Every structure is written in C-alpha cells, then in structure tokens.
Image 1 (cartoon, rainbow, N blue to C red):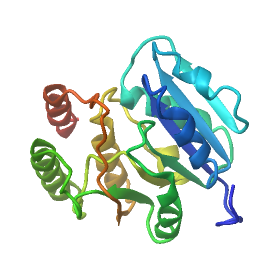
Image 2: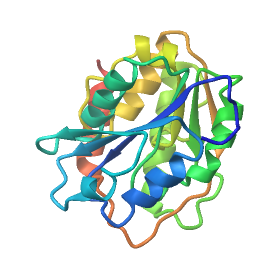
Image 3: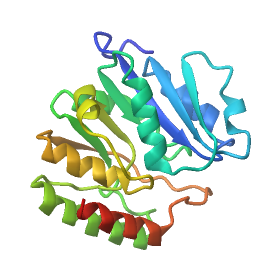
Length: 222
C-alpha cells in the first residue's frame, strides 16, 4: 500500500466473472492503494482466479456457480468485516474502474459515509440506453432517499465500515447496488460522489438490461 492515509486500514472487495484478461492487472494496481483485496470469483469458467492466486494480500472467495454481482458483493463484505478495516472499496474486475483513482475516493470519504463514482459528467463513450436508464434510476432514488443521487449504477464505491455493518443486501443481481443506496440513506448515512471517467473497451457487458430493470423495480417495494 502507498503512504496515502496510513492511519486507516483499507481493503477492496472485487467481484469478478470470467475476467482472465484483466483481473491480474486490476488486482495488482488496486494493491498499490489498499491493504488487502477480497476477490470474489462468481463461478468463472475461464480459470480467472489462477491469474491472481500467487499474489500476496489477496483472499480469493470462490462461489461454486454464478450467483450474481449482489450475492458476490455481500459475500465479500461478510468476509472483510471479520477484520478491522476502516474503509471498504468496491470495484469491478474488467478494468473499467481505474485503481489510480482510489486516492480521490479516500479523500472524499472523509466527508461522507458512502462515496460513489459519477460517470455522468463524461458520457461521450457511454451507450445511450445506459445514460437513460442511469438518469431515470438516479432520479427515482433521489426522490426516495431525499439525497442527490447522480449515478446510481456505478459499482466503483467506498464505504465506511459502519455502513456495511448495518446495511446488508438481499438482492443477487446488479440491483443490489441500488438497494445499498436506499438502505444506507434510510439508516441515516450520507452519500457523496466523485467524478470518474466513463470507460468502455471491447469487453461485453454482463448486465442484462431487462433483468436489471425488473430487479430495480422489485427493490423499490422492499
């Protein structure tokens, strides 16, 4: 870990599914800024975890089948909360979340309980359907939570440990990230944002838009 914020212990929960092309670089770069990475293999069938099982300060959590991002996140949270980390980062294993931005999250979390990456300040490379769905869900969540939610769908986040000690997800899919926003706000935690670039490469999105919408609607009535 770098000498940033040495008084606090920081870990990252990194769920991944079939990311053999990216996972090693993401983990190594993340470890420049955190003390430990909890890498949750969501049933990969491309031997992704063999690319990181020799790296120190990595704990691999293997799920026997594909359970969904929300399920993988909660498994990672459950494990990391056994240790005394002050802050817990989440980022994806497909290289869309640049670990070099972690210091910005660490700075912003001084003033908030949850900090989420905001990609909507730079939408030039974001598909139109993603922009529209994000703006709609962010608007709805802003109304529900009473806080300004500018990017509800970004998985690049940092939480104070007190948030994840109190907030547990019950959704298995991508909608879990919206569920965390709702439950955090209802529990009295404040949510901030940090601008990050929108990065889309050649990788194929694993999000099923229909399932994501249905899942989002479902959590609104929990």
